[in-house]
Image (cartoon, rainbow, N blue to C red):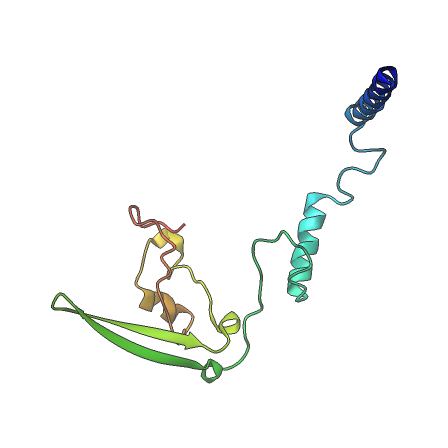
Length: 148
């Protein structure tokens, strides 16, 4: 009985070692590893698929590209709500905007005249593209004022 257990352990260890040796000597198999296309070809294919509205074709994409809406300015339906709060005898007011279709009407813009100009008022960036609603998203370094 004990001899049988040792025999099984030796055979199992031999099989495992052979598998590990095979894996270490040729871990990827024969001509099956590596990209079939170059990185530039793959990148261009991803961009083409994005512009063709196949945004979820690749699972590992960290961004999405949408075409700019060609509709007129009046088609951006939104609701506006203003609030005011009195905290420690200091009045603080704010505005909430709700866009009906934010993917078509919401854009992130660089400051007017580009990032080399540093920070500018949100109003100036909004006037640059004739935006109806503008908000400061804070995509800049608060110490240096440079764009992120």
